[in-house]
Image (cartoon, rainbow, N blue to C red; front, side):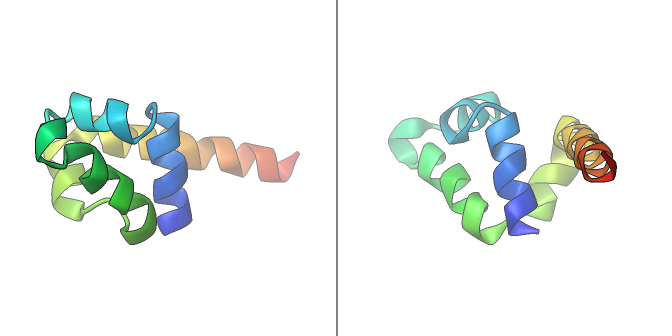
Length: 70
């Protein structure tokens, strides 16, 4: 799951952009928090509270499935 989460964070523009979109304060470690998710996985609570992340995950999975079939 963490490789998928890392790819998802990259797809969403990287740790800094995702932290900003989630309104995490960069001065309080917001970017580092999101960067850590690349190794630990995106918390379920974050994905639940931000349904657009779940939609992007679904699109990413679809993209990988199509690429593997080709």
